[in-house]
Image 1 (tube, rainbow, N blue to C red):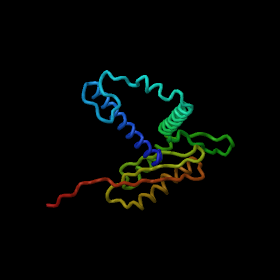
Image 2: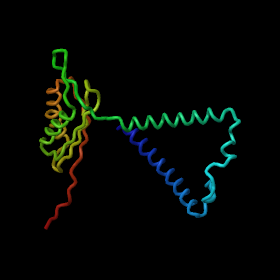
Image 3: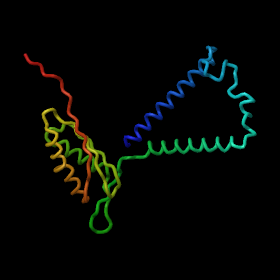
Image 4: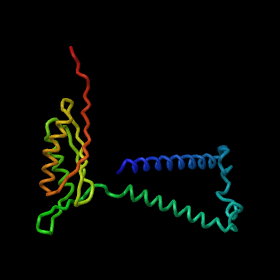
Amino acid sequence: MSAVLRTVNRVLTALAGLVLLALGGAVLAVGCDAPAPSWWVHQGPHDVLLSNAERTRWREAGWWWPVVIAGLAVLLLLALWWLVAVVRRRRLTEVLVDTGDGEGATLRGRALEDVVAGEADRVDGVERAGVRLTGRRDAPAARVRLLLAPHVDPGTALHDLTTRALSHARDSANLASLPAEVQLRGVKHGAERVN
């Protein structure tokens, strides 16, 4: 999920939560005979949601229904876009391997991720490695997260990862290239006590 989509997702979720909390709290308070807030449209538990005058107020205006329908259509399209963007799978399920015979073969994406992560785990000083394939099946890319021991030089770990795990994965899957985005983090450790 891209950073922009994550931000939009969080903002929309927070706004929807705040609106629902405010409206639900106000309805609950008015329904329990609490004094209604000054901004609330209903004043008591027996008040109707829409009065007859409110329901028929814009019936004769020619612009009312096209505007309502257009607004609801825009809201529906935005909600569908949001749903598709959130639900869409980002992980690459298979990689197309060029076998040289014109047919090709497919390699499970999870299998390639596990192999790269396993080899990255064996790099000196790497405590834990996580790999995720993204992109298209004929042009995959890797997102690698490495958790490094405190004594490890990040440049050396990155060089070893590139020349070993990523290079072996690229060669074994017969890929022209395997671009990678690598995130390095150090293991947190407590201060040592000196006596």
